[in-house]
Image 1: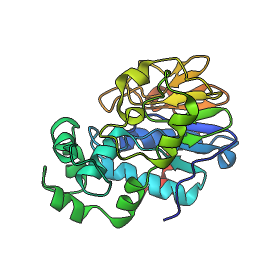
Image 2 (image 1 turned 90 degrees about the horizontal axis):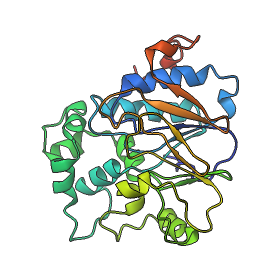
Image 3 (image 1 turned 180 degrees about the vertical axis):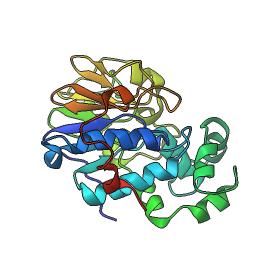
Image 4 (image 1 turned 90 degrees about the vertical axis):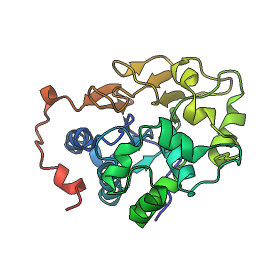
Length: 263
């Protein structure tokens, strides 16, 4: 599988934490594909594709198909993919980090097992039932995506550490840390201050907000947390928001969904 792009430029559609909500993601994709500049627009997923919602497998299927039909698609790693990958042995994890127990115990992973037809809690069964292309995608997710005007990372950046130091760790995917704060910290996700040296607007998910938050140098895009509410997608640089709300049905109807759905 071709590596996910980590350096992009041009217009962007950034989608918040999907968390297995395949139906809501389908609506977002339908509304994106009727945009006049859809072919030129990057689609960036902010991570947390799995867990909580009813169909994590369906979400990964859709993203794999989307990559085929729309090459300007990329995804960053969320803390849920990090925990899942470590639990399944796809990603290195420090010996002192009980990754498997954490994912099974506190990450609402039951829906991920169900969607793949695996016995809940049986990691060996899940590993056997996950398709190879799903494993390839989830195990190789980058920790950040860079754009001349935006920096996409799941949880956020530490305002007290120079930007270049953090970017190096993110580019390298520093697995020596039990819980990389850029993927896991709630405090970073809610902090609106960017570190010294960061010239871009930092765009994150991870923590649910009532609506997409636009500030001078920060954006927060997770509006469901995988629990309730409408999935959101922010168009940049326009700062326009597309949601999965049924009140905002696009003129494209559902025809576009056929492009991205595995039969």
